[in-house]
Length: 151
Image 1: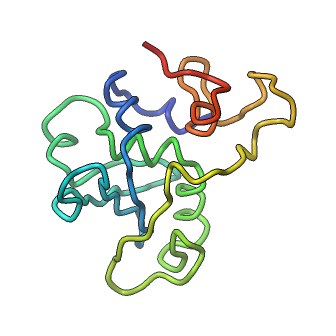
Image 2: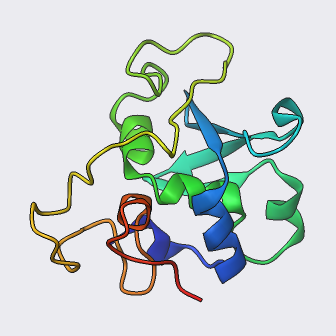
């Protein structure tokens, strides 16, 4: 089951989770999400707690104030490699594959860096990507034009 199937969130949150320039740093038990789209990214950096492979809590005001998951939790959920890294080596692996430092620093996983959707077949068959849900495509499929965001 895809991690997004365990979260409730609005279409607006889903879109923002995909298009904003988030930077991720793995921490013990979670991910620090920094919003590089904001004019002052250091003021928009929040820790997302990951439990059992799911982003369960975020320190941002929106996660506390509104119903459903915030954009930071959804951004982590749509990036399965982040969830896998938190679960695989808690407290030891950094987002760039190096060792985790004692105090979090901003590592990046640029959303505009060309990568292949490793779950997408070599063909253009739109049903092959395991990270896409029926109504919510993964970032790689959106970035490459294989799928579009829902209205």
